Amino acid sequence: MKAKGFHSLVPLVASLLLAACSVEPQPIEYGRDACVFCRMTIVDKTHSAQMVTKKGKQYKYDAIECLVQHLPEWSPDEIAHLRVADYGTPGAMIDAETATYLISAGIRSPMGADLSAFASREAAEAARSEFTGELHAWADLREQLKTDFYGE
Image 1: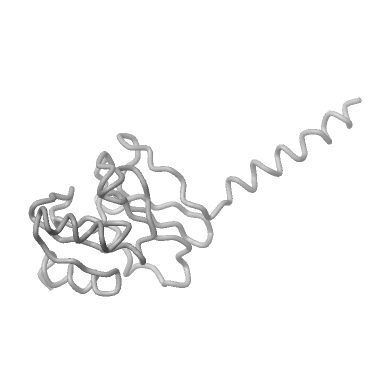
Image 2: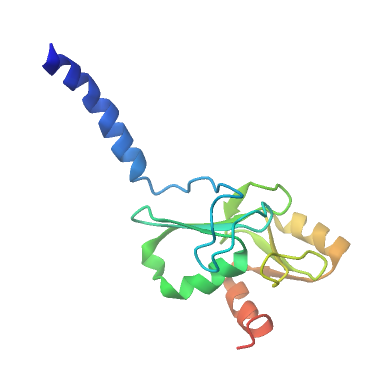
């Protein structure tokens, strides 16, 4: 009887172990999670970001610029997911590499780079027409931040 009960627990334990090793992004707990880069509590659902390594390690950020600053410590081969908050849909995370970015003093971000991400170019252009600013793709964003924000 005891062996039968043990065998019924095996699938449950196995599924819990698999879930713990998942390389999928886990939800950010706003107001509870801290930014791995600057240590601020993540509260802004329109500017947060996240990285997940291929080993499943979760890194959460209070601002996209914190993610960008943390990236040089990682090889692209180690990264499974890069996600950024969609400014147009607070709390929704989108692929960082396909997002369109707006740097605009009209939209303040937590760390002061005034950087926001949008799920589509059209949404970013609409925000730019309202707030002004410069649009960027992921490919040039890191270099742009070095020049404008970090003074390198």
